[in-house]
Image (tube, rainbow, N blue to C red; front, side):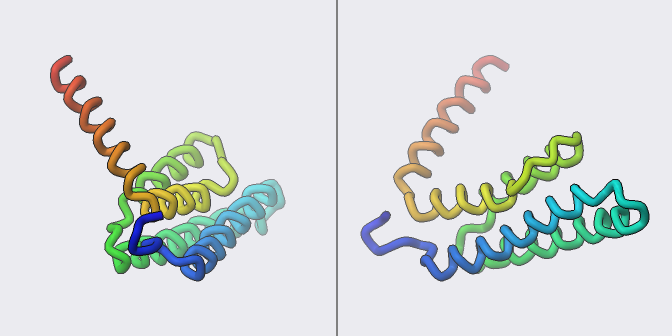
Length: 128
């Protein structure tokens, strides 16, 4: 953790994990019941709204914390793409949130990742 304390507190971690965890559990439940006539299709539609609401809450919270939600956005996009191609990964939103929280509370890891990303970007520019 950084010297000033964690950027995201334990209470916030618990609350946000409850939101993403609940959305992920509902998504898993809806996916398992998709074969049930009518109810499965209704749950499939509701699943997208639940995921959207959870995403909006987390994005708003991360923006208010000054984190701009970029890490969670990237994780959510990966989760959505995996769901679209049929690889319904359970608890993708929660894993994305945990990664975001870890990176926010450990700025040195984030700096190393940014430096590594910059070097990879520089090599990619030279290849072009």
